[in-house]
Length: 170
Image (cartoon, rainbow, N blue to C red; front, side):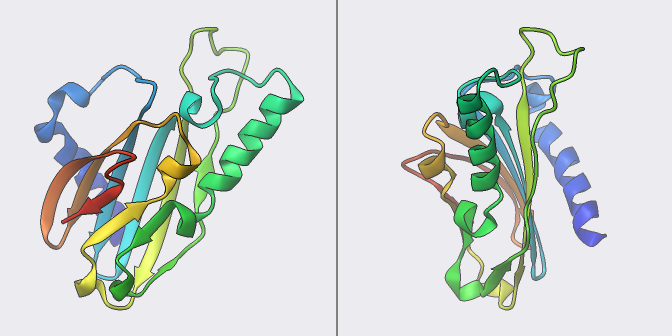
């Protein structure tokens, strides 16, 4: 419950930092990352354009495309591979929740699809937590940057993560 409240506060925190984000266009190669740290709990929300993960944003048309979606879902479902908190914090990964787009008859041909994923960790020494590194750039080569926002005991901040700078630090 406390983590849900912090996630809600992160949503309000995003508006003053970057009001242009509200209604911002879907951009290929860009993802969004929201991190909430509350005592020994870490909650991470990730939003990726489907194109970043599989190279298309529509219902799969072939077995190869269906396999690409399945592979992306499996990769994103591996919490410990996607995110690595500071080792000294003693964090254990909890199961991820990955939401793949559903393709209904109402989706237009030029619609943009996103993949959403939620991750959580429990940490035994949260005071030692100073960073979270991501392995997502290794798995998804079409991802160029993650716009990350963080809320936690040390305050709030934002940072752009890239393949050359894949760690959220505070």
